[in-house]
Amino acid sequence: MNARQKGFSTALMSLAVLAGALGAFTVVEFNAFVAKARVAEAFHVADEARLRVTEFYLLSDRFPSSGPELENVTRSIPVSSGYVRDIELEPSYQGHDMALKIYLDDGPMPGAESAPYVYVAGNVTDRGGRGIEWSCGAHGVPAKLLPGGCMPVDL
Image (cartoon, rainbow, N blue to C red; front, side, top):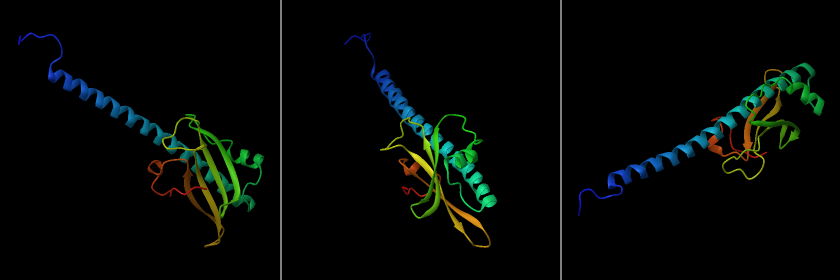
């Protein structure tokens, strides 16, 4: 065979395959990073809403019970990147005294079957005075994207 054949050598083909595999891996990891950022922002909004609901409860000795009250409580929560679509208040829901659901935008969520949301759920407690015990979780969000303290329990 002639040493000056036309075409790609085995080394060049190997490099091209390796570059393609790395590119595919990078796209998958980037999508996972974006999904984690969406969930992290939703929990940030949930924490802000939780603090404002706690303040409302301590001042009025009850949870917000209407749309205008919830809107008043959540009006000044900063949502800058647009990953959060809506906040809903669910009174007396699934054994909790109340739950705040923070719905994610309509972008794709890996493994989501319905509108994904995260939640913070509150129960009134009398331990050492008047207070609220909070828990968190999600629906339609893969468990691997949740913070360590949140159990993947559907509301």
